Amino acid sequence: MPPQLNRNRKGREGEDRASAFLQACGYRVLGRNVRLPGGEIDAICLDGATLVIVEVKRRDSHAFGSALASVDARKRGRLRAVAADYAQIVAPDARIRFDVVTLEREGLRLHRNAF
Image (cartoon, rainbow, N blue to C red; front, side, top):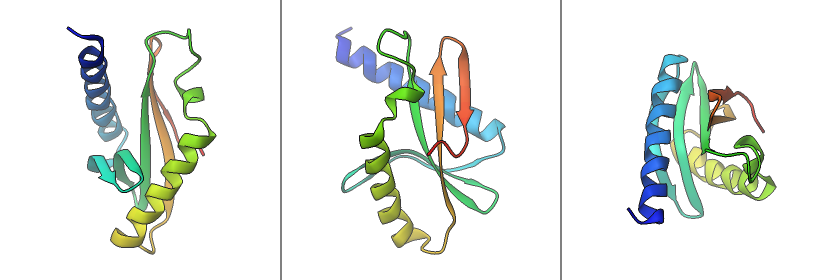
């Protein structure tokens, strides 16, 4: 399998696992891989009345740092902008939180209010 296809497959598998994990944590998954001008949101969820924008990051190795560290300032800024556009259209009065689900050798971990 070509490296890009293998990477895409691993990404999809990771997002599937993260979605099931979020549901097990009590989240209601409203959408996955939501594409908007300016970027993509891995998962949009409800945690009670809070709209949660979730970034999913998978790392099979720590050679390039941790999964959480890969959500750098540039990525956070892009997510904030895309989330603001989404909320303005769908839920202008919603309270928004940003969570990150990391998938590493140690397993899945939910980082609530990550940024």
